[in-house]
Image: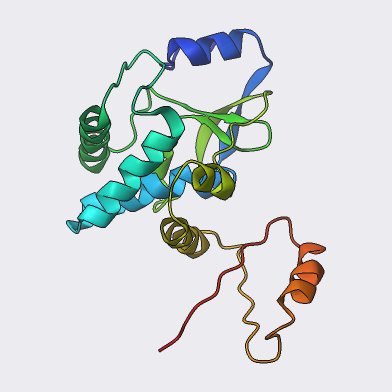
Length: 208
């Protein structure tokens, strides 16, 4: 089943042991605070496309890969080492820019709309956001959220930067400014907002 698509051996095992179906999605439907790695990959991809790559973005990308797998990818690609990850993504970005998304590959998602396989490819599709098919597997999602990366050594400034980029992409995101009336009442406001929102991100900014 689904032999028209190329999957790595790990995903083939998941598909063979789970219920799966092809579903129509828009790439931005798959944005999730549970998968902030997609945003990091998007930031890197945009820097490549716009010719504005710099050491901060390159380090951001490598740091998040280190947190996820220590630069060893456990699939058929056999990527080992930071340079292998950089080269592979650079090649993918170049291919997408020239030829578009390769239809031989299919994004694989969980039934709660978290990406299971194809996060790098997903990141290259967010701007155009064209309707496409993805394979939904009825399995629990893989979560790489704010706390995951913070616990593994990424800095708060790095993660706040990622969150701001997420907010730019997510059309459902809303911003509440608490100053001046909410100053000193942050916990109360946080409690009230949390009752109405699935996710909440708090950040203090110094405006000069």
